[in-house]
Amino acid sequence: MNYYIGVDLGGTNVRVARVSEQGQIVKVIKEATEIEQGVEHVLDKIIRMIEEIGELDTISGIGMGVPGPVDNGVMMLATNLPGFEGYPMAETIRKHFNIPVFADNDVNVACLAESFHGAGKGYPLCYYVTISTGIGGAFSFNNRLVSGKNGYAGEIANIIIDRNREKVNYLNVGAVENEASGTAITRKGKAVFGDHIKHAGMVFDMAREGDEKALKIVDDMAYDLAQMFSSIAHVVDPHIFVVGGGCMKSKDVFWDKMIQYYKPMVHVGMQDVIFAEAMLDEPGLVGAAMLPMSFGK
Image (tube, rainbow, N blue to C red; front, side, top):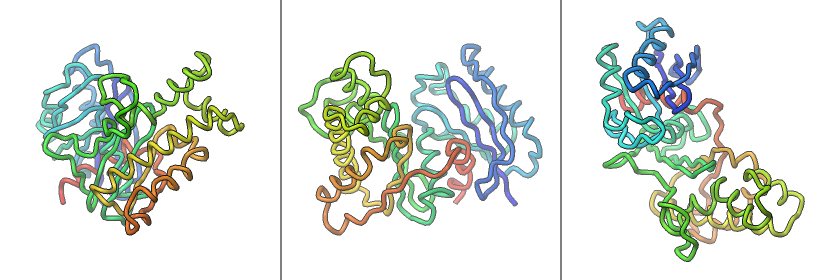
C-alpha cells in the first residue's frame, strides 16, 4: 500500500500526517507554526515533523496545503505567513527528502479530499465551496485540480451578485463574500440588531425562532448564494457542488431556500445538479496528502 505525507500549514499551527492512498490518517503530529521566527525555522520544523512521522521508505510523495494561492510550489500571497511569499517551500522540502513534493491552497486541497474520498467521490466534475468567515471555491476534474494560469481558478469570493450593494472592502461592490459569508451575516446582524451580535450563528438562531428581520437576512443570503452557484454552473456545469465551512452548521435555515432559488436561475437541463454537504472531518490533511496522487496522474 502507498502512503503519503499531508502537511496542513497555517498561521497558528502546522500539522503533519501520514495518510494511506484510501484517505485514512494513520498518524498526526501538531506543533505551533512560530512564523515570527522566520521561514527557515518553519520549514526546518516541518522537515523534522515529517522525519518524526517515520517509515519514510513507504512514502510516495508529500503534499502541502497553505492559506494562499500557489504557483508551482510557491505561495503567491502569504498574508498569514509573512516571508513565505515567493519562497520555494516545496522545492526546499523536495531537496531534503528527494521525493515529489506538491503544494496548493487550503481550499483546493479540501476540494481534492472531497473528490477522492468524500461527497464528490465518483463524480468527474466536482466544485467545492466553503461558506465560513469568507467564501472560497475550487474545481476538480477527474480528481485533478483546475487551478488556472496563476493559481486563482475556482476562487469565487469576488463574484459580483449585485452591483448596487455597498462598498465594504477591497473586494468588488456586491462581491458574494461581502454579502453571504459568515462575516457578512454578522455585519448585517449588527446593523439590524446592534453590536451584541457577535457571530453569524446568533442571526441564524433568531431566524429559527421566527424573527422576521433575521429571516430577511437569511433569505437574502440564500438568494445571493443561489446567484453565485448559478454563475459557477453556467461556466462549469459540474456534476456536484460539495459545500463545507462553518455556516453549514446552520444549513437548516438557508440550504433548501438556496436550492429553490437556484433552479429558476439556470437552464432546465442544469437543474438536477447535486448539492451535497462536505463529508470529511480532516479535508486539509487528507487533501494535501492526495496532491501527489493527483499531480502524478
